[in-house]
Amino acid sequence: MKSETSSKSPTGQSETVDNLQVEPSTTFLYICKQLDPKIDEDFIEKAWKQYDTVGKQYVLEGKQLTWYACAVYLSMWQGSLLENAVPKKYSLAKLLKICKLSVLEFFDKATKWVEMINGPRRLKDHISRVQSSLAVSAVVFKKLLPIFRKIFAPPYSNDDEDDVKGLNCKKLFSLLWTLFIVMRKQFNSDDLMNSFHLLLCTVDFIFQDLRRSEMTCLLDGDFINAVDIQHEEDSILETLCQIFEGVVLDAKHFRTHCWLPKMRRMSEEKTIETGEDLTNFAANEFINKKKLDSIYEELIVKRGEMDERMFLPADISIVFDEAYDECAVQRLRRSEDGDNLVDADMLLRISTQSCLERLQDQRQQRTPLSGRGYVISAEQYCPATPVSASLYNASKLEALLQDNWRRLDAEVESILCHSCQDPFEKIMNIVSQLSERLEEVIENEGRLDGAGYDASFRQMFAVRKNNTESLFFRFLHKIAFSERDRLGSGSIVKLSAVLLREDFLKALYVCALQLVLFTYESVREFPWSLEIMRLPAIHFYKVIELIIRADSSLSREMVKHLNKVEERVLEEFAWSLDSPLWPSLHRRTDGVPSSQAVSLETLEGYSVRQPSLSQRYTLSPVKP
Image 1 (spheres, helix red, strand yellow):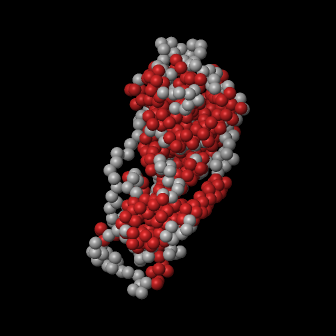
Image 2 (spheres, one colour):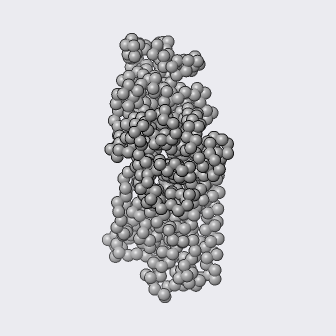
Image 3 (tube, helix red, strand yellow):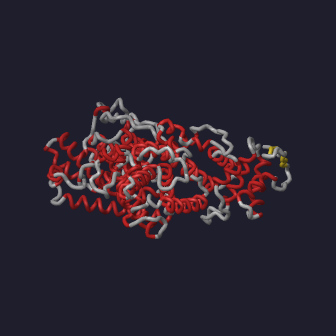
């Protein structure tokens, strides 16, 4: 704690803050007046009071300009988040330019500032969202560079001259990136996967527009020849996904249901200038860039976010140098006076953590019932770069669902017919009820928690529902074949009866839903899937090993996730007050088994014993 701090202003004058509130310093007033010559005096007083109060309680090390910027920026937001509007709208980029601060230095200090002023949770969340949004853009910008080199032609010698008439490589790169960041703000999502697919849609749109406008001189000739496009309206989105690790199904759905409707609406409202069918966008580069800049500047000031046009290089030729990829986001650590003030890797670490990691308790304790080893097929390691790692599980899921699983195979139907005349109709009725329940809950949560809650999952709900249903049918087929082969024809009737049990089918659906939620990094974490379907955890536990044993194509990450979920069920959820375990244990003639009775030493052959499907639904509930 400190009651007095001293600092130097840019003019070298000493500024003293003692226990009595003093008038704003000359430097502080200079910053505010540079931000807005007509700035409200009450706002200056509010921001200075915040700085003065913190300065009496903490040692504000380093440049006071940094702390001034924190006080000004946080004062804009501290009292306005509840009203969802900023009363004093000033550009964060302009504030950092005035104070000669790097982006990373500011965020480092702003996070500490929120703690020092004991800011509310919503203020901390705001700083985190702004920082995360910039982090996603940094990751996507680095991904854009190899894509741009692959598809578009290198610049001519005079392309770096801004006064060159007509569209050139530099203007094209700027137009593409500006369109991307504007569209990203329009969709209001910081989801990394959706942002990457949005980038691919933007590149695809610009590529098609250049071809239709007969501006192919800006395209790479080798790429045009390689993709073998036969019709002008053909999209290269699938090709982009194959080359740059996108998920084809998700990208196409995003393009059809999000990108194109939004672009058409913007064209109809004259937000952008295009011809019919969204043509001539690039041909109207000057007016479109001007309109997009205006929209973007209004959005980032309204949200208090950083200007992501800062990534655009002054020299377009360096984009075509692969070595530039490693230092593409160096601008984030460089202040206006050219000094590099913080670790260049800081933002990328933040990016990876905030975009790829799921913040949840990792329960490591193992129990006897879960001590078995899961045998899965060998596969390539999971890529560790931000975008490819995020897309890895999605691509694995897409591979699982390539076949048409939303029907019953003739062999499976012959198994199920032993217990029901029309098994497909019965199964579809159950699946439809579960999907309707899922949709109802998603809509209700959207109304209660706001449109921004888990926005990416909600926007892609139709696809996620289809993913869940297809994965459900895949699991049903795999288990039916696996159990038939293990048990033989003599147990077909018993197998058929269990496969058509409602609690089994519901557990299978929930398991499919849980993997879809995990794959697409939904904020709805386990046991949300159990709760909305009102499924007892013990029933869910029964199908986990069956699925892993029957479907060897599950990715290693999917198996690890199911393993962790199983641990949580065994440790807590299976023993809830309303669990079916308690009535079952009560009916046991020998009472609740002791720990010795279920120890590994007394369970002969436990490590190799694999209960069948029917045994799991007829034997002791402790080992279903």
